[in-house]
Length: 171
Image 1 (cartoon, rainbow, N blue to C red):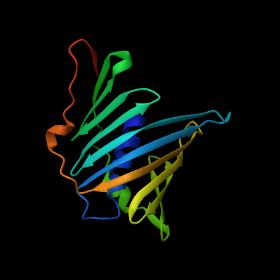
Image 2 (image 1 turned 180 degrees about the horizontal axis):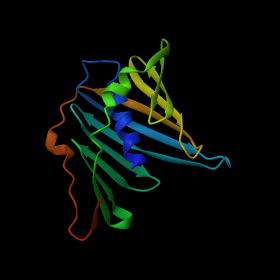
Image 3 (image 1 turned 60 degrees about the vertical axis):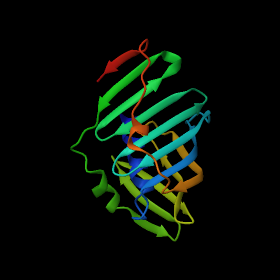
Image 4 (image 1 turned 30 degrees about the vertical axis):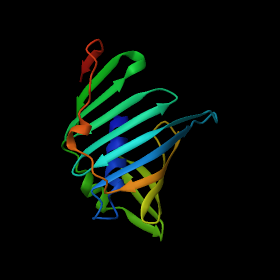
């Protein structure tokens, strides 16, 4: 569930500083460095649309799709032939959390979400990078590239296509 909370936080953060953005598409590279200096890097593409639609497509090192539509999250893991379906805790006011973010410098913001401090780096008014230390003391760095805003994305794009043979786990 923490993974899902981070994705939602990132989704909302992408829109935190510019009200005219309705969609956001970008490549991402997510690096996680543990206390033993072992690093794992994920990469893929993210598609986001207001009010609360998102698709995180992980391509490396494993395929995974994470769909967010309203209060529903669907995680499709092809290598496991598994789908996890869960609902979000609607008692968390993510927009209120973001309004508490503070501008540190012209291109850096800081906010606290679920007890974690996040640094948000902007480039040309777009989110370029988000850094934080998770509860397991891993250093997490998510960098966005090839950002595009306000492209047309139909709502049905965010509807997962679940293969019949996959195991479906509902939480």
